[in-house]
Amino acid sequence: MGNRNKYALAGLAAIVVVIVAIAGFVLYNGNSRTASTQYLPNQSSGRQIQIVAAENFWGSLMQQLGGIHVNVTSVVTDPNSDPHEYESSAADARDIANANIVIVNGVGYDDWALKLISASSNPNQTILNVAENLGIPNGSNPHLWYNPVYVNATVKQMYLDLVKTDPADASYYKQRYENVTVSLAQIDSRMTEIKQQFAGTKVASTESIFVYLANATGLDLVSPPAFMDAVAEGVDPPAQSISEFQNQLESGNVSVLVYNEQTVNPLAEQMKQIAAQHNITIVGVTETIQPPDVPFQVWMNAELLQLQNALNANTLGQ
Image 1 (cartoon, one colour):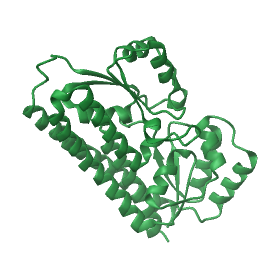
Image 2 (tube, helix red, strand yellow):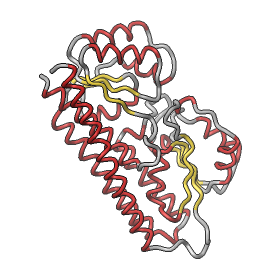
Image 3 (spheres, rainbow, N blue to C red):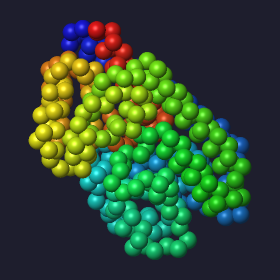
Image 4 (spheres, rainbow, N blue to C red):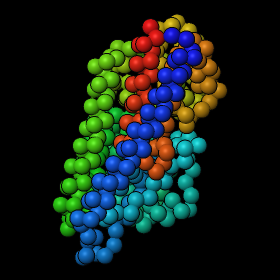
């Protein structure tokens, strides 16, 4: 298939993604409104649980679980910046110091938040360090929200933390936890569908953000780990990994290149250009939820649908 037809299909895929995202957002808001009409805020306290999430992907899930009983502040949300390079502010320090629950990703991804937690020394806080809760050791791939097993386990812990903090509203949180679990299962089903259709298909990525998702969908991620890790960490990849990656893209064996739109550097951009020159479909993903005001599930489903359509387009072009 030629470039023109392939990119036409990619354009159609993008339209479908937008439609699905809008539909999902309407559905999400509808569920939220329904739940809100069935429950009243905790009359014993007269206040909401104050929650700070270092990143909006965890904040979105906590907001869905907590509903009207929580006020969630997500710190890292900017679609135009690299979350790895975030620098905290005085407002962040104040929010974290006053929070009942603080959620951090861990594994070195948001050390700025851990420093603020340590500085505030609030003994009454519940701290959910996602990596520690999962038993993920330091030095591991920090993009934990792209692993469906990790997401499901984290949502369960969020639910338990809410019940512990506000036991009077346990039944409310239980209902919402069940709803969120169902919506996440739909994402897991799409991953399974991709795996059934395209398991073993060779794909590449400019960054380690895609490793967990490639494993979950059964795709063969061939790009050099040294290159992906270096880009994620903001350092120069080894020369050998650059040459190897370029040869892979020029070989004609790679179907899709996944490109992290929030960690842009000259070498990653160079690989993206090589992929385009060799008719490899490029799929953009982001570190944080985009657009920032949609739920986690809408964002993740849209990215999976874009990936699935890109793989389909490549199959049709063979």
